[in-house]
Length: 260
Image (cartoon, rainbow, N blue to C red; front, top):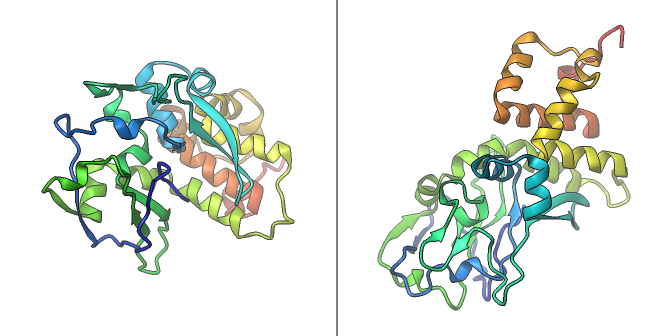
């Protein structure tokens, strides 16, 4: 998956968890909040879950007010991007000039990574590091600050290591679809199901608990109680169900009841 903010120049070098860079962002930096204008931010499932909870609104309300649905071309899969304000600077709807981000504790993953871009994320057991790159925009003065980080330190400080783990199932779905021949396309119904599971947690909850879903599938009572009270576990349950339904991976975990 690629995450960036339309950089004006990206050095070609690849970075690993141990790569070092110098950067800091705070209110006294001359360019403060300038990177929050004219941006292109893809929201992850966990971004949407936490942002809509912070705002105290439903998933439907969040999606209709703050996002734009799109199709990720290389994977032919639904994604959502942050809808910008229609002002001259095309500002993020959550940024203020002097105080910064109004939802800072729940800001999107891409914002947390900045000034790093993510070329690919993998949590396989092959020991390989994810691939990162530096996003160097001409206006950014943060690179003149004296704070030095390793990529791994920055990820932990910004809380993206935990977010990436929550979103792992979503990333795996994207990668799996992207690896298939271009001729193998998902049906519109499958894309709608993917969209609901990944981006509309309230609708997916209704689908699981208010439809015939639990009458059709063998789901343990322990799992039912867990996903009923924990939205992160419900989200990850949805990722696993999509893998089984769309790509026939882990089908043993979603056996149809004999009476279904």
